[in-house]
Image (cartoon, rainbow, N blue to C red; front, side, top):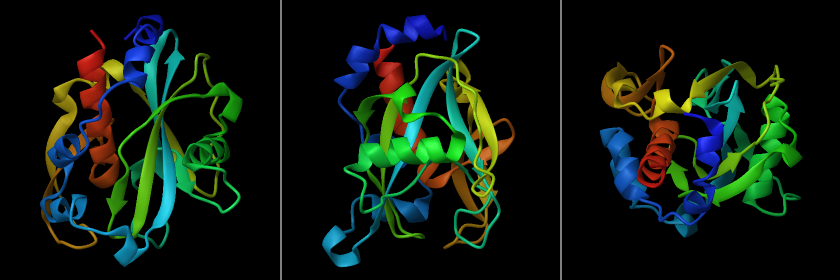
Length: 213
């Protein structure tokens, strides 16, 4: 998709009504569905995090950036994710967290990103995080500088490929709570993107399809 073509729809995207649960459930593992509605922040006191769903031009074509996390001893080891991370006490708000973490993880300076809209927050039971996604746009071509301690690789996904239903698949995975579970996923360059990232991608996809003609 031509990036200049996308830009004319940014005002509509900023005002878009979010599908929330209706989008998340499309890509939710069966065991995760109850957690989409049946939890209370007062009872579980989740940790807070924010991520950036960043659209930008590459050779004039709109792309979405994802990262491959390093292997480590944790529930999100070696997974595909959005750049982002944990809310810090001196962060003024979650949007700043998403901007700061994006700069730290992939080297995109905060000032290069325009926040378009916050998307629906999503609770992740295995890590007890409540994640706040933000749609951001950079109007200039980007050079990424991955943070070696956090990021094993950068995936630059053309938006037109992301919006194609052909990359939506089902796959068998061993999750943190269920073994040999069949889950919906996005097949992105051979990587299976599932769980929370897939659910956030699902909401982004629904909004883009509805508002970009």
